[in-house]
Image (cartoon, rainbow, N blue to C red; front, side, top):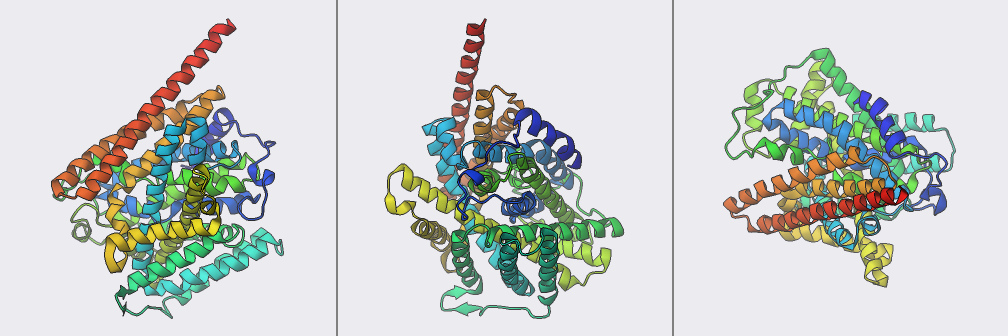
Amino acid sequence: MALGYIFYSRFIAEKIYRLDPDFQTPAHEFNDGVDFVPTNKYVLWGHHFTSVAGAAPIIGPAIAVIWGWVPAFLWVIFGTIFFAGVHDAGAIWASNRNKGRSMGALTGDVVGKRAQSLFMIVIFLVLLMVNAVFAVVISGLLVDFNSAVIPVWGAIIVALIIGQLIYRKLIGLLAVSVIGVLALYALIWLGPIAPVALPEQIGILSDRAQWILILFGYAAIASLLPVWMLLQPRDYINGLQLFVGLILLYGAVLLSGPELVAPAFNTNLPEGTPSMVPLLFVTIACGAISGFHGLVAGGTTSKQLNKETDARFVGYFGAVGEGSLALAAVIAATAGFATFGDWQAIYHSFGQGGVNAFVTGGANILSNGIGLNLDLAQTLLTVMAVLFAGTTMDTGLRLQRYIFQEWGSIYNIGWMQKAIPATLLAVGACLLLAFGAGGADGSGGLVIWPLFGTTNQLLAGLTLLVITVMLVRYGRPMYATLIPLIFLLIMTVFALLTQLHTFYVAGDWFLFFLDIVVLIAAILIALECGSVLSKLRKQDNQVKQDGR
């Protein structure tokens, strides 16, 4: 991955996207101090990286190791280098070249109105899944590991202070970084000493449901604040915290050399486990390539880009950071168990593992490798997972607000174009799914989560389509984006058909019909892709013939 960043990302930046340091970015052109804010590339990297990381690069790889650690390892490595980095940097570049517009709005101009309508539907579904599910994941972690409560919420106070220090330039970035990381780790040390738990039941609401309501209340407020006040500093400090955590985890692996108790290729799969191809490529989305990254790149990151050349560091290196987290999840979920029997006890059916396997396995590695107290190690990894999921919720809800505002603009609904009504609609949609489909415990987001991977990869394919069309129109090589685009569309359609059969056999008619909707969207996008690119190639050939 280091070689990928040093060499391949430079090739992509200089020969394909041709990033121009003198191009006036939307952050400077529309600087409003709220959404459009020119930002130091290291701070922006922290925002982008932690916004796209979330819990997904932990959940996906920690589930996918059921097929063995080698397939997960290879897909994360090659997906990061040739798919995710190209996709993320390209989405920032495409939005930056179009006044910081979101990928949904940009699709209408670059590809066509039909593709834009499909894109908006897919975007809404992905954001709905991410926000609702991450709320469930965070609430579960805060209940199961209540030593993480103080560091998780204390990090918000730290971020608010850091935001003022950076924005008002009271002290240098290095000093701010040291202060922020030390404060965060002081809170992590305090967490196990003073655990916090909500009442197990208040009326019909369980402690998990209470946390879900609190999280959405916080996310709504955070999504309305200027990006420099909370979003940027929180994401930046979280990014630094992740690197410290990864250094500790990888260091513990090197020092202790834990045994990979999981098989390289699992030939004794539990009954009901789907085929590795194509499900591996949608189970691990974040950590290899993820359409959600394009939403962040065009929704918030491009609006804060100081120089266009920063897109390489922010986008491609952000993907490398997430790939490193995904590899850590693979290691924790395969080498963090004492015996193969312990591993099998967790992975007794498809879908098991996830964040808890990462926290438990990683804590065992830290405890055995560097002698870290087990409770403290669990708190450290839980805080890492929760902070990433929380920052993704912050950004995700802000993006969902943008979607409602864009719909208000498209259909000329004045009140929907305003920030507060659009935010309330975004929160309302998430809560409707959480409590409408999940009952009083608010776990409704998990109902449609089985389709997250395919929907997310479909979104990545459409983002690559937009980037590819722009490259063709600029007369630049397109194969670096076209090959990943074709691969993703094939695997997504294949996975949707596989899941369609699974839902039919299980009699899960809600997911069955939702799968059909996403499948139709995937097929239409593939047709749109072929049509647009074919027209552009014909126009290009005609221009060359006329030139002769």
